Image 1 (cartoon, rainbow, N blue to C red):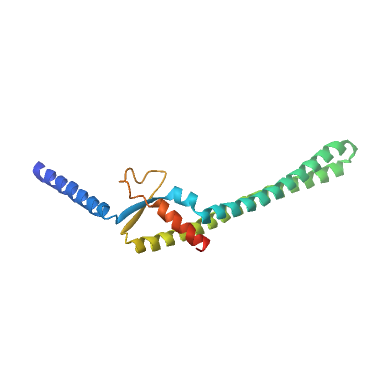
Image 2: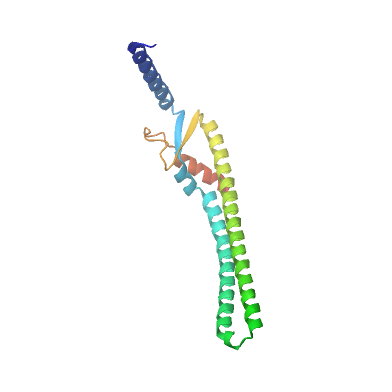
Length: 179
C-alpha cells in the first residue's frame, strides 16, 4: 500500500515532468498547431473541390426537378381527364404514374448516394493533399509535432506564436497554384 507521501511525491514528479516537457517543446517551437477548420476553409484546393461538387449537385438537382415536373404534369392530366377514361384506362394510367413515381424515388436515392460518395472522395483527396503538405512542411521547418485544433477544442490554450495556420495556408495555396 502506498503512503500519502509517495502519492504526493509521484504527483509532484508527474506535474514537474509535464511542465518540463511542455516548456522544452514550446520554447523551441518544435511543437506547433494549425487550426484545421481555418486551414481547410482557406485552402484553394478545398474551395475548388467544393465548387466542382456544387456544380455537379446543381445539375443532378435540376434533373430531379425536371422529372418531378413531368410527373406532376401527368398527374394533373390524369385528374383532368379521369372522368372521360374507361376503368381500364384509369387503372393503366394510375399504374403508369405510380411506376414513374417509384422510379423517381429510386433515382433520387441513387443521386443522393452518388452525391455522398462524390463528397467523400473529394474531401478525402483534399485531406490527403493537406496532410502530405503538412508532413513536408513540418520536416522542412524542423517541427517534431504539428497538432490540429478543431472546432471541438483539442487545444484549449496555446502560447502566441505556436499557431502556424496562416503560414501553412499560404504555402499550401502557393503549391496548389503551382508557384
